[in-house]
Amino acid sequence: MVDVHTLKVGDHVTLVKACQSRQGGWHNSWVHDMDSAIGCAGVVRQINWDVTSNSGQGIAVDFSDVMCFRYPPEALELAVLTGEVRDAPRGVYCRQNC
Picture 1 (cartoon, helix red, strand yellow):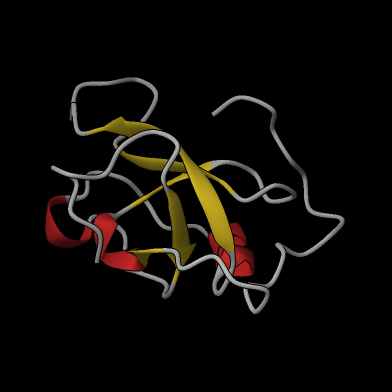
Picture 2 (picture 1 turned 90 degrees about the vertical axis):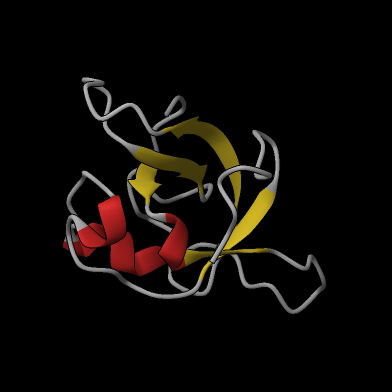
């Protein structure tokens, strides 16, 4: 689990597991498309814990070829970037901005 107090935009994280919607104070929903990035490394684009925000609460991560979703901290770990980190799956819709 990443620490939202020390995590910053530009950090690399790995999605390590799926979570339940609204788990652990995360006021957002887990959708099936998020599963395609499990095991992939991505870049933190935004951190939002404002529960009143229209853009959604969570850590926005860009996994290159996977739509940019907002994940709970329980699903992420800081990435150790080596040649063993696999790329996100190809052919999945990618949004340029989170």
